[in-house]
Length: 142
Image (cartoon, rainbow, N blue to C red; front, side, top):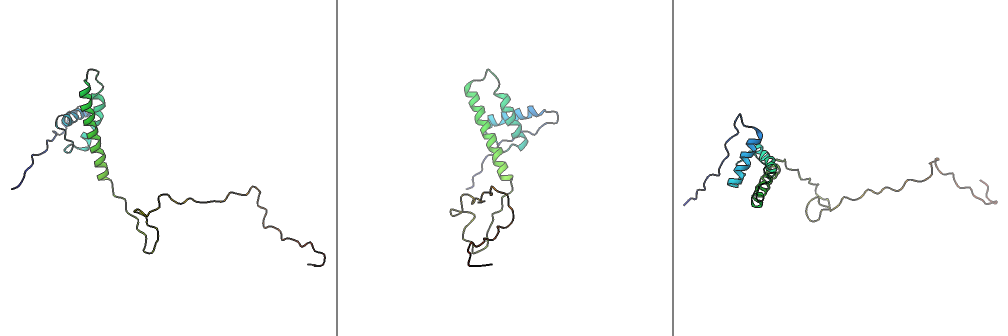
């Protein structure tokens, strides 16, 4: 027995004579109606997030509508963030050669970098090496 799932709804592509705001409004309306962000392109998501600010600016909206719009905006922004993380190149893990005592990653890794300690500068100007001390004894002649 195999289970088949219904296809996710898809937004019609942007028309050549359609403005960016109108396409963003259609994308935002699509998310409000279907609660699906997975099938939208990155441009459609960005425009829908932009249009959200314009959509809630109406004075005659009920609080329930504003809450629903805010939920959809959070879903849109979460999808944008997830796609940015997936598309970002992975950072290479630095591996030290064998025999090094302190690991770079894991629970034994140092939490903070060790501070660089520099002694304070002397308050006098350097005049060369210090002169050799002279002996103050009378019985030894140098």
